[in-house]
Length: 262
Ligand code: ADE
Image 1 (cartoon, rainbow, N blue to C red):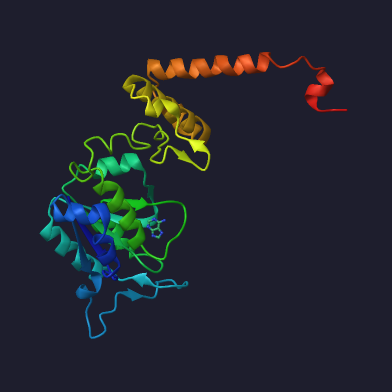
Image 2: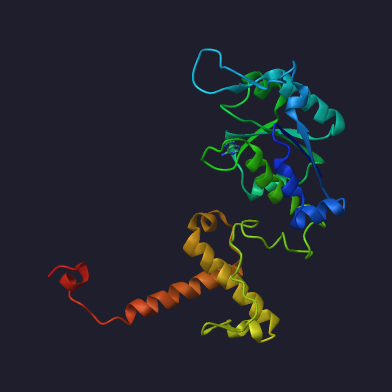
């Protein structure tokens, strides 16, 4: 997968490329992360990339000519790529969108600054618009890094374990199960015994149950979207029964006491 980032701040990507899983993936030729400086395609001695908006208003707008030049150059180098504009007006990025992007040969990421980019570029040069959330950043560079990071780890061979990405939170509308590492006891709290038991079936059941309970408590909306397996339905039914037992074991109270009135 070739990620080509179009930006007026290419230096921002030096550190991003130089660490962790992204660095290793580049070294192993699983991905490439290159930058094109939009300023290199700007005319004149000062190579200006922005200008005042037509119709007035505050802030500056990124000029179309340097952007068009930079996108054409990127397309030439990576013709099978799609061109994505990072903007708070785009569709909101999530794990499913990351999975779709991971299927492409390359992504050209256009980073706007200031009040945005000239509309004619959006209409004629951009295939997709992506926002990383409902808040406004000072530019698309951090959003690009978020997108690259999330997509790169889905490329086969980028993560260590064969199935690490498949078991991610969100990949199947379930949050990932709880995780523990050594020591077995930390400040009087023990690792759940089942994880030390060596019983793989029980461990898998425990993982599924903690996944379900986390999703239920933290992200009920995900659970509503999910087609539950029979095993998951059984676990949920067991909870229902347990909750009913707790409720029914409560001493009888008068209606007044239940409603909290004196
Ligand atoms: N540029 C500015 N804010 C952004 C956001 N929320 N997502 C993507 N790109 C942006």
